[in-house]
Image (cartoon, rainbow, N blue to C red; front, top):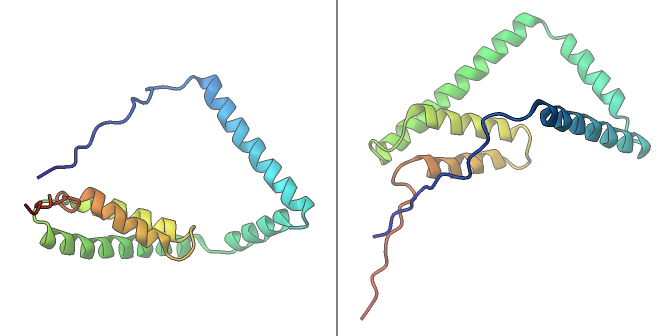
Length: 144
């Protein structure tokens, strides 16, 4: 029977030179401004949309925003707890709650950005990656 072996990737440098970091941040800002300028030239009113979004956000009470964040966090945690129970029953000792919570929260966040609930698909793939024994392959017997 063959087992999958996880090998560490290339080492990431502990610190990045401040000048290089500043250059990367500047390039990101300039790139964003170029994209916004191109969209404005194409007739898409990006600045007006951003202003409208900001006005809407400013109109929300701080109390409602805090309560909304608490309830959304509670919903995510309880749903992850449900997934943890399912995965723990299927793979005893092969999963931890924090890993399931992280995978589920990442999927929820992705569903807010990507189309067609691709975040849910990513969540399921992450479950396969984090659950010990879920990706185990079986060797096929050769018929002789």
